Length: 109
Figure 1 (spheres, one colour):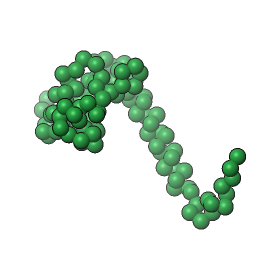
Figure 2 (cartoon, rainbow, N blue to C red):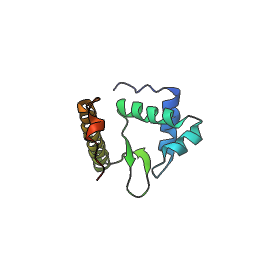
Figure 3 (cartoon, one colour):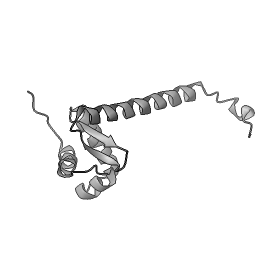
Figure 4 (cartoon, rainbow, N blue to C red):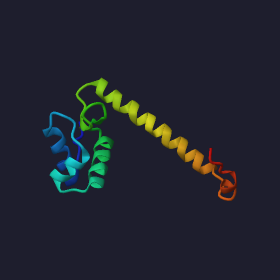
């Protein structure tokens, strides 16, 4: 099996996630690693792209963790799929927005 090569930032983020027993918030990871929250988000995205099962938890304790079961992984996949569907819908609505006539059509209810 081919080894997974990590950048220094990805390694720092993964080390913090692996060291916790509960989900950890990105802000906390940023504080512990001296990275910005944006860098943490990017590292998490990259870790997922490299095949590391970093999942988000929003029920109870919010944050990220390494999935230990298929159920945890599938739950995160469902959440991401739903989010992407909403983003796609918003993108389509924005694409269809008329720059010239929207002001005339606004009506406060």
